[in-house]
Amino acid sequence: MIRSAVRSIPSQASLHTTTIIVAAAAILSICMGLRQCMGLFLPPMRADIGLSASEFGLAMAIQNLVWGLGQPFIGMLGDRHGARPVLIASALSYAGGLLMMAFSQSALGFDIGGGVVAGLGVAGTGFGVLVGTVSRAVPPERRSQTVGLVSAAGSLGTLILAPLGQALITSFGWRNALLAFVAVAAAMVFIAIAMGSERANSCQVRSRVQEIDSTTEILRREIA
Image (cartoon, rainbow, N blue to C red; front, side):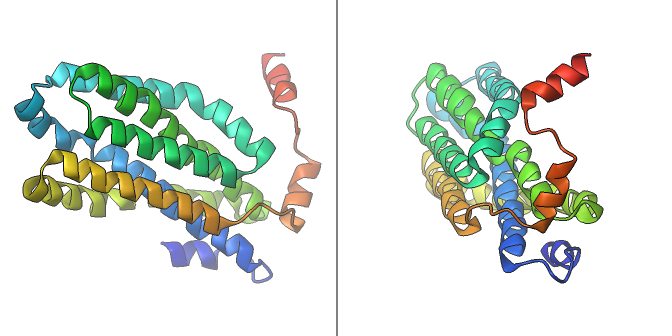
């Protein structure tokens, strides 16, 4: 899939653009993969600390709510300051939320760590920031195909992380498995650093001519 995304870029595209696409696909794959594996931890948590399915579900519902509410605002930060610092901060938040879950002894700890803190991490390392970054990196005629391929990469992480998580839980317990997932989430920091800073290129210049820079202006036009 990564090779297909790279082939979709025009031959004159820089190595920097290729790196952005590959890094975006990797980060999205890890972000979605970790999120989809959370259900594996419910049975051992229930047996160990008595966390009920409803309490666990509430934490995940809070995560989804924070993800949805935070995504547009974090996306705005990515547009204003560049993707790399936002991705680094969000990856640290994701890892921090999982770390809080690993040491939690009550439902409140899961609500704060797995719900609020990890939810902000999902919002910042998910589609909102990465799709915008990829869109700015490729020419308009290749944008839909490349964004689609990067978005599809979000499902690849589950294929690796789900069996890995189950094996870790069985062999080392759910807390140690979560600590391993903390390390996986932290790996997104190094991928974001490798992505580099966004530099204006010919694709960005051409696309921005017809785009509105202000989010306020976009909302004003939609409301009107």
